[in-house]
Amino acid sequence: MADGNARNRLAPVPFRGAGFAPGEHRLGGAAALVALVAIWQAISSFLGVSPLFLPSPIAIARALWRLIVEGDLLSQIGVSALRIAAGWSLGASIGLVVGLAMGLFTFARAAGFAIVSALFPIPKIALLPLMILWFGIGEPSKIATIALGVFFPTAISAASGVDSVPRNLIRMAQSFGLPFADIVRKVVLPGALPSILAGFRISTSIALLLVVSAEMVGAEKGIGAFVLQAGNLMQTDQLLAGVVVLSGLGLAVARAIAMLEKRFSSWR
Amino acid sequence: MLSVESLDLFYGDAQALSGVTLDVPEGEIVAIVGANGAGKTSLIRAIAGMLKPAAGRVFYKGADITGLDSHRVCNLGVGQVAEGRQVFPTLTVRENLAMGGLLPRARARKTGNMERMLELFPRLRERLTQAAGTLSGGEQQMLAIARCLMGEPDLVMFDEPSLGLSPALANDVLDTIVDLNRKGLSCLLVEQNVAASLEIAKHAYVLENGSITLSGQGSQLLADDRVRQAYLGM
Picture: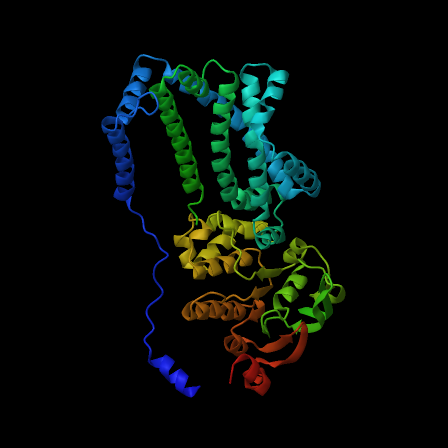
C-alpha cells in the first residue's frame, strides 16, 4: 500500500487542464464557405452535371441579378416581409402578454400552461386550411397562421423568463415597499428579458418557415410562391435564387435579434 | 432594541428554527455564527417579515412585529443587507439607491441621504450611472449597504456581507460595519467568517441545527474550545 502510493507519487501527471475551449477563427469560417461554393462550381463546370438539376453558383448569382434588375423579386420579398412583420408582431405581442401573465398570476398560469401545452405541438401549417376558411385566401389567413406559430414559443419563453427571475431580488424590492407595477417593470421584466429574446430568436425562424409554407399553399406573390412557381417551370436557377434570398432574410433577422440581445444585456 | 423570543419556523414539515431566543441591545453589534444550513438566513428572513414563524415573538423597540409584512418591518427601521447582495442588476447605481430611499420613513430626505451615501462610499459616486450588475463584488456589497442605509434604519441585519469577497475586501466591509456601528447603528451580523465577526461583535450566538447552542461575549466565544474546534479548526 505504502509502496504503491510512493510509486504513484513518482509518476509525473501530465497537465490536463487544457482543451475543451474551441477558439474563434474569422478567416477559417469564410474560407470554408468559399471552398464549399468553389467545389460546387467545379462540380457543375467539370463533371457535366445538368444545370436543370444543380445549376452552378455563378448561374444562380446571374439569375438572382436578373430577377432583381428585370424581374420583381424585390416586390416579392417586400410582400413576404410584410406578412412576417404583421404575423410576427401580432403573435409576439399577444404571446408576450399571455406569457407574462402566466409567470405572474396563479390563474393565468394554471389555465395558460394547460392550453399552451395542449396546442403547442400542433404543426401550425396544418391549421392554414382552417384559417383560409375563416379569413379567406388573402392576407389575413397567412398572417393568422404565422401569428399562431409565433404565439406559443413567445408565451412559453416569457413565462419561463419570469420564473427565472431570482425571488430574493423580488422580495428585496417588496421590502422597500415598491408597488407591484414597479416591481414588474424594474425587476421582473429586465430579469425575464434574456429568455424573452431567446424566444424571439426561435419565433422569428418559425415565422420565416410559416410564411414560405403558407405562400406555397395559396398565394400569387411572395418568396414562397415564387420558389414554388420556379420549381413548376423547372427554372432551377431561379428557384435557388429564391432560396438564397430566403437564407439572406433569415440571417438578417437573426442578426437583428443578436443586436437586440447585445443592447439589452450590456449589464452582464 | 430587537428581541426574539422562542421563535419556531418551518419549511413545510422541515423545522428550520426551534425556540430561538436572542437580543440585540441598542448600539451594539451582535453576531450569529453557525454552519451552512444552521438556519442563520432563515432567522434573518423571519425577523424581516419575509417568512412567517409558526410560533414565538419578535419585538422591536418594545412593539410586537411578529408576522408583519416586510415593507412594514423595513419602515419601522429594521434594514436588511441580504445574502448575495441582491442589487438590481439592470438598474443603475443611482436607481438602486433611490429604491432604498422609497421607504416612507426616509422618502422626504432622499436627496440628502443619497449625497451622504456617496460621501461614505466614494466609489459609488464614480459609478453612479453604471448598471449595478457591472460592478465588482465589493462595490455591489457597498451598494447593497448604502441602499439599505437610504431607508434610515436604526438596526441593520447583515447576512454574510463578506461572502464571495477577497479577504482584503471582506475586511473593508467589516470595517465599514464597525464604522457604522460607531456612528450609532445597531447591527445583527450573520457571518461565515467566524473569527472576524466574533472579534467585532460585543455579543454573539452560536446557531446549530436551528437552535441557539451557545451564547456569550464575542471575545469569550472566540476563546471557547468548542467554538475554536468546530468553527475555527483549532
